[in-house]
Length: 141
Image (tube, rainbow, N blue to C red; front, side, top):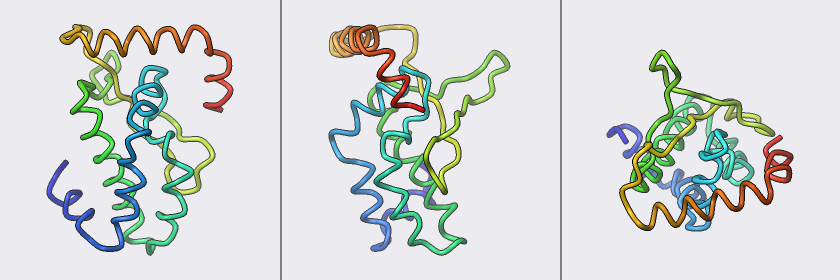
């Protein structure tokens, strides 16, 4: 995260946003949505939109960008990277049911499996996706 985004979360008015984004139960949701090629921020959208709404218009866009940077840091620590298209452009996707956050970065795991934990999580995610693919697709709408 660049210094500007990190400094944003040092502000007292941004602490609620940071707490909402870093709840431990969201990490698995960020990973799952990334595996489904949906912006990870979608997992937290209902929690963060009311907080973002409280910021003035000038600060709101920075809050949205800082939120994405924070989610990016969390996913990077877990082995994810920004997904890129065939031309090398960052992939983004539409965020649904949101007033302020209109799009988000799509994250992916690199092709190589470097750890036993990652392989275990991958197997669990694959099982979930095959069992509940229709439900997950409907929830993503």
